[in-house]
Amino acid sequence: MVGVNAVVYLTALFSDICFTIDADNSWQGGYPLLRSCCLITSIALLAELVFLTIRERRSATRNRVWIPLYVTFIILLALLADGHVGDVPQPVSFLTIAVVVGCALYYFWLHLQFVREHEQALAAEQRIQIMMTQIQPHFLYNTLATIRSLCLKSPETAALTIEQFSRYLRQNLETLDQPGLIAFTRELEHARIYSEIEMLMFPYIHVKYDIEDDDFMLPALTVQPLVENAIRHGVRAREDGLVCIRSTKVPGGHSVVISDNGLGFDPDAVAASQGTHIGIDNVRERIERQCGGTLTVKSKPGEGTTATILIPNAVESPRS
Image (cartoon, rainbow, N blue to C red; front, side, top):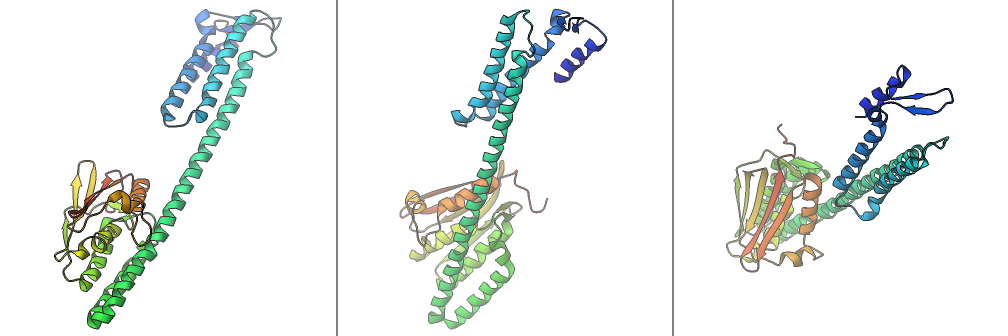
């Protein structure tokens, strides 16, 4: 549209069908449709500006959209002002002034939006880093506490546990420092080794794996904390504690379900709790922010807990 408008007005260099400048340096219009080409184009672009602003900023506050609407208003007002002036000579039209001022204001508005979005992205990254630093020492502390208890009860089992834990640290310590996405198989290995350490101390605990789909990525330290919650705060109190980890391909993505037959709990109370509990909101927010996934937790006291992670297909596969 802008290109067509430019071509039409360039005809003034060799024709008077659009407009001409006479000997008195006055503007003279040509055919009505062609001389209004700029006005028609401006109105169409203004309509598109308003539409895009409203569409892209539906969730924004009113303070964030008033500048584009104000720009549209002053340009329309300038058109009306130029129309009422008539043939009175003007060194600069009201429309020209309004377009220049409007472009400057709109540029500043766009710049502020980019700065705000960049600050929000940085804040999200910093929040994720804080979450990771909170989870890492928690996992290490719990594992070392388990080994300490085993040293008193069964030195041989403690030695085996230390060997497993050393293997875990040697192979996966790099993953602990990775705030981004990792292969599900690596995250599952975190959960598996932690579960084996727990089962050495509590032989009545069992962990069952039903892995049908493992070709996807997810944030580091998401499955393992949920398995840890299921064991430490659920099935440890059962004589036949069972934790099931199941992964399947579902329409639109990948599903990881961690269920247990433990004591159950109030999800709202645990999400708001502090101390030794690993916050469910912590895991949920990282899944949402880092890969657009979801985490839902259903639990009822005395009946166990089910946590379901959904990872969308848009997340890059480690084997793709």
